[in-house]
Image (cartoon, rainbow, N blue to C red):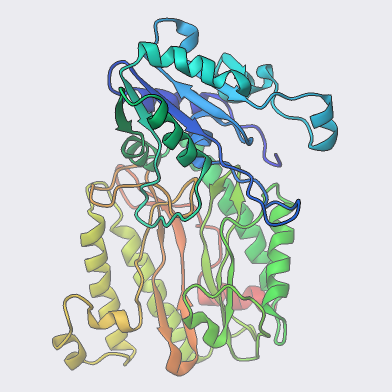
Length: 430
């Protein structure tokens, strides 16, 4: 891994939080992701399943974590199963985790090779009444590929039909959404790497540069700072491309006078950052661009203040909509009649700001979190309002990552990333 080793104390705490919510005499199993084939002998780069990483720190394929807090013997309460390494694998694929190294990473003493999994699980099932299975229940998930986790669940249900079944996901949705201080530090590192990439761009962008050249500058800066790269597919949208919310082609030339919407951010140690900035290709905003930009900035700043313990996500977005409506009236994009005659199910402001303002973030860019439950301290959210005007051939979005505080305004993890018009123009022209 490129990143520095994370202290195993984090994963010990995470497991304690999970097992404290388990039913008596129950087992939970978590699988790593597959390495997915492309064609011939090619594969996609490995990306670890976030749940097994959250609970163990193991960042390796063909790994399994078993938790059994009520096991009859101490060495059965936490067990890791790993792909057995050898000299041949070390030469062809690189070093894999040894049992001792796995303990250093995870804090788990009992480590078996993967070939022992079925035998050990069978013994655990003779003691246990309930199995926690790990299904993907994220509100944005659309999974068409059968995962390693899904194959295990199917096999287990056939092999052990007499056991009760419980779900891991509701527990994980709650505990993963509230970050430990170590996790906030890791997200901060991802944000700091993102800052370096963004500052690199401000002196690089000029008329006629291409979107993919900007992407290349970012990946260079991210990787040289121990990131694997982008936390998500980058959006580098110049001119009217900014009005396509998920524009990812990044293949156009950036023209003088246009704006570039940059929704780009680095990961670090599997933790995401999620930044959006909008900058002028020529290094200076027009008066109209500046007016819209500052309207978006005011919405972002006001929305940020509302992220506090007890806030309900749905009501928060209603209030943000009111602020955005006021700004759109001021810009002349809406008039009073538009607002008076609006459809409550799709308010007038949605014509120019059609997406949500905030989502949970952490190990996943769209991280775990139950949106119907009140916000809590140490949750991390994005704040990302935008105004999109196809008729004027530009769109503006601004996005920061903030930590909800027990008291006071949220803490902005992107506080050092330039966002004010004057600072951006100054840096682009220095």
